Amino acid sequence: MINKTTEWFPCPVCLKPLDVRMTKRKKPYVICSPCGVQMFIRERAGIEAFGELVEQGLKADVLTRIDQLEQRYKLTCPDCATPFWANPELAGTNWLNGKVTGYRCPERNCQGFVPMGERSGTPTDPSPKQEVSKSGKDR
Ligand SMILES: [Zn+2]
Ligand SMILES: [Zn+2]
Image (cartoon, rainbow, N blue to C red):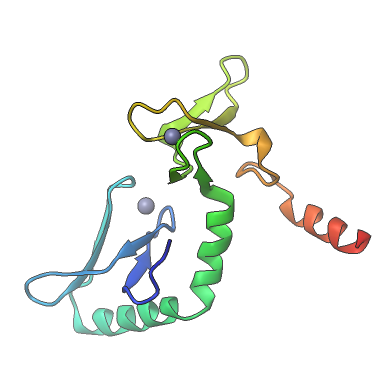
């Protein structure tokens, strides 16, 4: 979960919240190891703008976005209950059609597998909004 008191910034590629770290010279940077993204902010104007973005992130807007992302991509292993992110590296694909069938638990010694069919909104679902509006009208 996101700790709201910790400064973080979403990865520009996968939007995963990353801890904001400081270099020895007090320049902020974030690192996303799965993506190999390293973002350093070296100039003062950038650092100020970045600081504002981080502050906004600590408030509502970005959190909502991340929440939505979490609902779609954050999975829980059915075996060991470890929460993990749907990562292409963990994807199990169907041999015949190359479709992603689910995601493997990243824990060692765990054979847990989260099939994408069991989730109402899969990452590949092109029209998640329709579902929402339908169920809203019915009730
Ligand atoms: Zn990333
Ligand atoms: Zn597991």
